[in-house]
Length: 121
Image 1 (tube, rainbow, N blue to C red):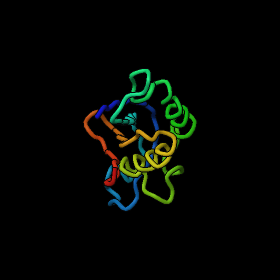
Image 2 (cartoon, rainbow, N blue to C red; image 1 turned 90 degrees about the horizontal axis):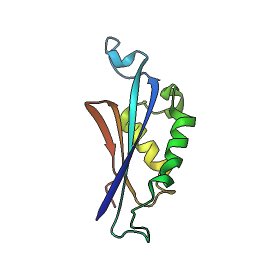
Image 3 (tube, one colour; image 1 turned 60 degrees about the vertical axis):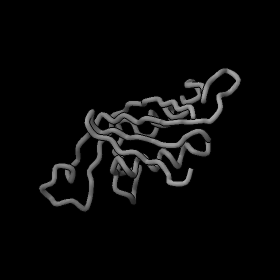
Image 4 (cartoon, rainbow, N blue to C red; image 1 turned 90 degrees about the vertical axis):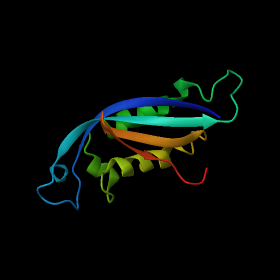
């Protein structure tokens, strides 16, 4: 199995609901996110790639136009704007376009990340 990944940084704000009022994440705040797209394939294409990294520009274009410098609460409504929900939303958006996609990772800080990877693959 061959695996590749590519990172896409962006900045955005959000607040999480359902937390105690004194929880810092219940207030509006921002992160410098990093989305990592993970692809895999049993075989390489004729160029020797899982997929050409240039073909992943669709992810960058989406992030730049839809997520960067936005309030994620507006985008993920009615879901909580957690890294976990963002990872699944991105996976669902890109899986039809990138059949080799097997996971999306969303990092809010250099020390934290959430990964969405469906069970049945």
